Image (cartoon, rainbow, N blue to C red; front, top):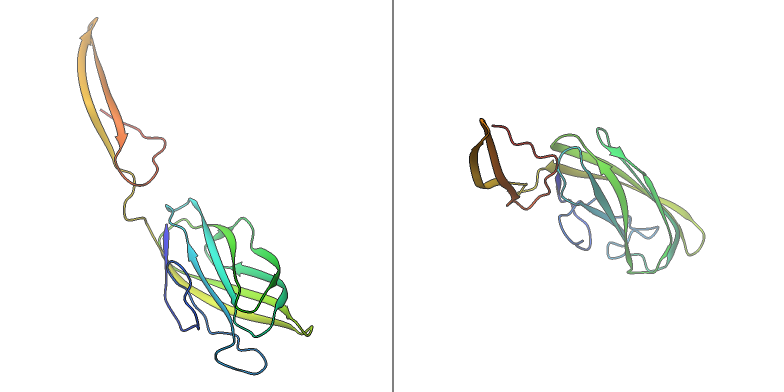
Length: 178
């Protein structure tokens, strides 16, 4: 299941497909100084575990510390839903990862809460909704049979072949029926 994020405005781009919320401009409300939150999800098939990567960038003019990132979403299962970090210098970014599973393709929202303490000891919280869409990878497994042979032995028909995965995705528990 691959995830595509609807983009909303933020100050700086993140790698990969983007999910963005409104920036936290701090006490002064300066547009050029903000805490940015975005994210990506690695491709996976429905029901398989993948990784939600939440990118937090400190656009404030001061270091922040005691960072906690929590993620939640309806219809998804998290192996862990909270990550912590010690500090982010001004301008520094960090990625917090969450193992996540979803059983089907479709629209998905993740509610992300980032709590942190400013350099002067003020605790702040930033809430974002990352709007996403789970889709299957463009190049799934593609099984091809080659070298198919049928041989009659002792009154029985014996079939043999080689099964190969020509696609870009993993294949397991392949069943060939005759």
